[in-house]
Amino acid sequence: MRRLLLLTAFIIICSTIYAQSQRKPPAGFKKKAKQQQNSFLDKQWWIGLKVGPNLTKASPETRYSVLTPTNYALPLTDKRYDGFKKLGSQATLEITFDYKGIGFSFQPTYRLSRFTYTNEFMWDNPENAAEMLQLKYDHELKLDYADLPFIVKYDITGNTLRPYIQGGVFYSMLINANKTVEISGTDFASGGTNELSSEPVIVGAKDLFHKSYWGLMAGAGLHYNLGNVRLVFDASYRIGMSNVTDTKNRFSNDRLSGIGDALDDMKINNIVLSIGCLFPMRFLSTSFKSIDR
Image 1: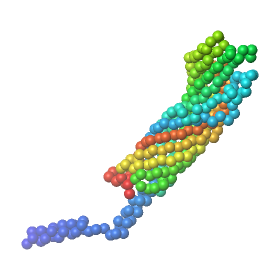
Image 2: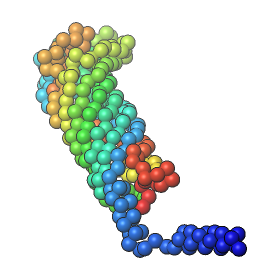
Image 3: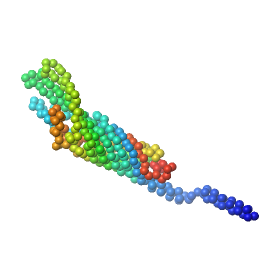
Image 4: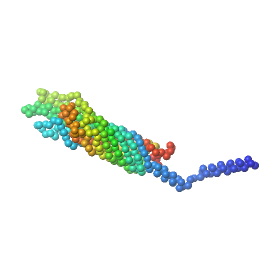
């Protein structure tokens, strides 16, 4: 009899536990849990790396030259800048805080930018127009900068594929600069036509540039949410707002001054493309995909 009572009590307890496990939670409980989950996901930190190419255009403001022609107009010796032709590169660490589709992003970047310009000089014999010397100078500059941009992003939609727009301000610090000058020309003054060329002039040009400059930027991009990882592609246009040339050291390089070169006052603009991968820093659990709602 005693064993029968114990067996009956055990069956009742097991039945009660099973019934409780099968009971559905109230609708309000699910709604509250979902609200808590969404509230958690409204805020997210992202960190990751981006890399990509860039193109640079130098925009001269005040022009300078070592040589001054006496028998033709000075503007004929002006430098001709080739905008957005030389490919550079950059690597970026992105740190972004998202709040309901608005992102506040700090993106320290190491950037190599390149741009070119050319100019020409001509010498002739006033008594014999056939005796003439033409020289062409092809200049290439490579500038290494550490960029410190602060950017605000706005997600246009909240789907898995999320286009966004962005804008901000940046401050760039010069790390290094090098300049290469290739000289070619034609000599008509030696009784014939002779093509001239020489070894490139390669110099360190860091002293010719300001240690820093600042600018504004705007652009757009795409986020693609892949599980707990966010793939990102973006493009931006950066407008330099201050002169990059060090006016005090404009004529300080003897080798460049010797070939008639002096930097113009200029600002530089960049087209920057980047692709990368970002990782979320806040999770609900190891099995929960923090960016999928």
